[in-house]
Image (cartoon, rainbow, N blue to C red; front, side, top):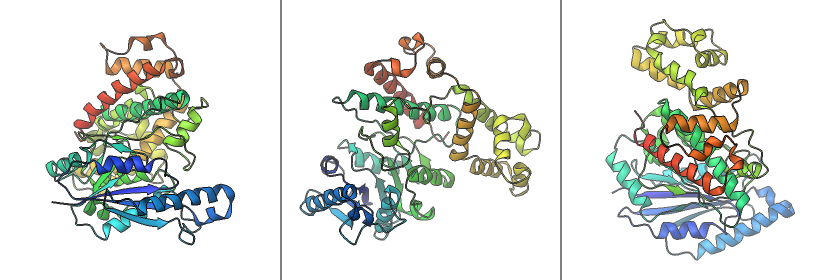
Length: 405
């Protein structure tokens, strides 16, 4: 039986972490598990009033953890005076890297590393479901776990922003999964699980200040063995944040002001050129299909320094399956996102038409009738947005079950 090791970065999280630890203490699993917590902040925070308040809160958190005896805890102190991050090293990505490094020093190859956040709740069967999932799929290297954000009934503005952002994320994922893209994952730092040996093989996480979770899952996707479905999901919190340049917290903060420019609802037609390129991979391999024949391929070619990337790839692979693999290495999740944003900037469908057309395409006989009113999402009630969120959650999970195709 392999050990499960839960990794949680924590900065100024005394208001949230106790509930997360309580949820972990109620786990019903036969697998031994331990929890690693990295309490952290930059050392420079001690030098200014706002930062010093975070430092003081972290000291209170360290004191709380020192008396916590309901779980096997390993507390990494990067918060006490003289122990904070030095200049140039900061952010949740660096905290995750330190956690993973520490865990890898004591892990067997098939031990599971569970990446969570300090404000994420899970049901009592969560860890058991992970152990069962990885046991059932020995080829699985990593898992991007389904998620479902908790709402805040006391804050209508935050609730609306959370629902709108989650609808944005699910719309993007569903459209990619519908065209059988290998990059149809949603990467949340609170919802990633991996085998220790797989994390070692990809060279661990890149300690970015933001987006480290996306690049981590993309590495697993390129290596192979990534899965997207689990019988239990995680429940991240609904909260504002400006600690990172982008992600859920910043999106909610902007969204609460009605600013959604960076998180549009993409029309399904934006993804059609990608689907067409996938359909013509055999022709591309045989030299019968060219970049100018497809908008997505033309975009990839334009953003590559080589004269013809597909000729180069053909010359360096032995057969068609290896060509397909090389193609997807080039046209990865980042390139797809860049293309979708580029395509959207050229032809901006209104939010109302995008969500209406998408849902009519996905559910022709059962799309939410109230969407036919043709308004933007800001117009609809919280109950209506939650209904849409729930339908998309169900649709996405069906698609996740069949990934990879």
